[in-house]
Image (tube, rainbow, N blue to C red; front, side, top):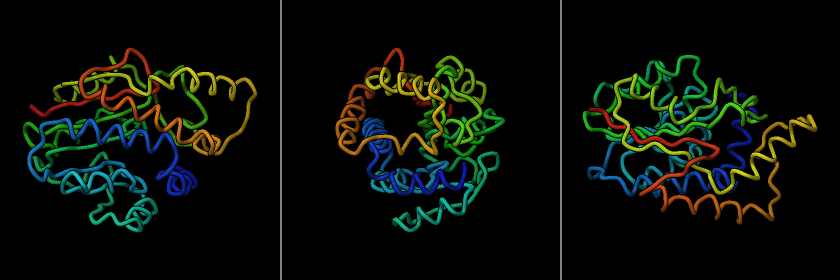
Length: 241
């Protein structure tokens, strides 16, 4: 991603509704899984570390990112264990991770199959991967451009990707369903007006932030047991056979 994207993420990631809501959903879903005591967790593409702080409460969590700037932000907020590395060649030994979390990272890769194969390599047999990616190419917006995304996905494409890497898909759903209509309309309006924005994360009025965060995070308990037919993003839970 561009350096300015990390700066914005570091500034707003702890309080912006999208980051807060996604983090709450991830925690709810992870706490609903049958994980071993003190699991070894790797947060791939950990960015500036907000999710990693949460993951440290669930087990022995290490953040991995290719950006030294991002890792410096993460370390500054108290992330105890970080590694600089490439998702094509993770600095992690084979069969060592109980859980791999890869939130909105595979869409950055030219060869996402190689990234998915690396996730499988580092997982222990029976280990779990929690993966999220943006949904639907027709939802492409300015945030995809500034974040240097290569693609957005359908559920079927995510299934083919993960199964092609040798992972067994246990759950696959769209999410960010409740806010799908206003997000779709907002992106359409930006396209029609040709508005230039450095990041969509700077567009939310502060008065709406708490409401949007609550609506988004409310999907977490539902996602522990069920899914949604459409959404802004895709979530998958996959197991290494």
